[in-house]
Length: 156
Image (cartoon, rainbow, N blue to C red):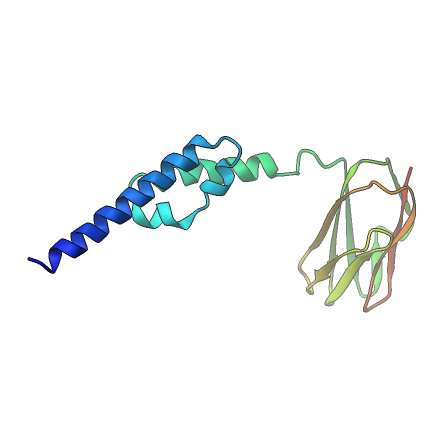
C-alpha cells in the first residue's frame, strides 16, 4: 500500500496543478488562444479538455481566415513555359490584401520583387503568397528557375 500512496499523491498533485493552470488560463481574456492549444489539459482531462480546445481551434481559423478579407485574388497557371493569363500588368490599390496563387507543371519558386516574398511551386501543386500591398510602385512577379515573368503588379 505504501507504493500506491506516493502514486496517488502524484496523481492528485498533477490534477491540482492542471486545475490551477486551467483556472488561470480561463481568467486571462488576453491570452485564451495561448491557453487553448496547450497539450497538457488535453492529455490530463480527456472528457472536458477536447470540448474546450475544439471550439477555440475552430474559432481561431474562422477569425483568422483571410479568405473573405482578400481584396484581390490573382491566379496564374504555367504549362509548357506558357503563362495563363498572358503576362501583363495588374493594378491594385495601396493597402489591399492580395493573394497570388500559382500552379506550374514543373517545380519552381514564385517570387514577388520589392516585397521579397516567395513560395515553393511543387509541380502540379498550387503555391500561395498573401500580403498587404503597402508599398506603391511597379513590382515583377516571376518564377526563379524558369525565369518567367508572370505579371507586373502595380500598386497605387
